[in-house]
Length: 306
Image (cartoon, rainbow, N blue to C red; front, side, top):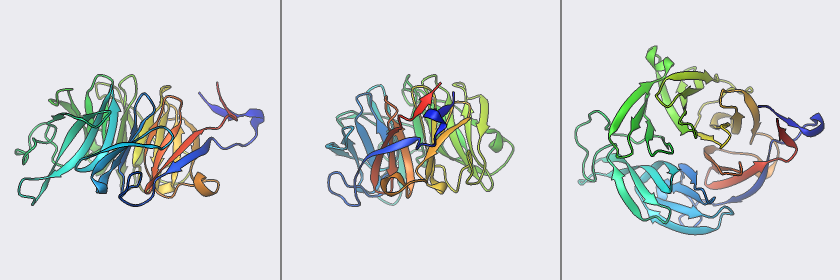
């Protein structure tokens, strides 16, 4: 599927709609937010990492509720549940441990998933125990996927380990790190990989088998800069990548064919300064964490799909 402007005239692929948030600790303010997620009603959840809380907003940025957490690395939504990859201090406050906490959409806690230990100091590292938090994604069945640091770990809905997989680059012995992850409606996994000269998106099937990859280091179409910090997938399977190093969002088909980009062209709020995380709602509105604010974009009506 390609996207073209009407009459073949140049047009912005996405249009800025709204923004909210500034640096601070009041309701609606943020301090180093690390993740964003959207539920089926269009409510927006922000992992406000260094304020040690989750904030919930409606689709227009109106504050709804907040609740305390540890230092969050990432947030995901699936089937009425909010999943947070977070770090908490150990009992002696001399170290920290990571876990996947869960909440309902009102912030009430649900049983934690023991991906990295328990509510006390973590046990010795073993299969399925990840001692540093990382990007997470959750499929429609409740399976949890964690990208850390050179492999994708899969956990069953009860938190028990279900295996791990490495990318082709990692299998070849190249030093690479997995920096972002997403799962589409069919269970396919998309994971961002960064190495000395490697910037790419890997696509894996639900069993973890490699399908394809795309991207390279650079600033051209389909290339990525210093960091890739977020991935989202819409209901049609299109993949949105936070190309932080180039201050833009790039959109691809599920097979990696470039569709469009935005964030590095225009003026004012159309420009992204340091995008970090992304989420897409049911209407393909795109929500981006950009510094200490949330920016909302919608597809420009000048673009048609065929």
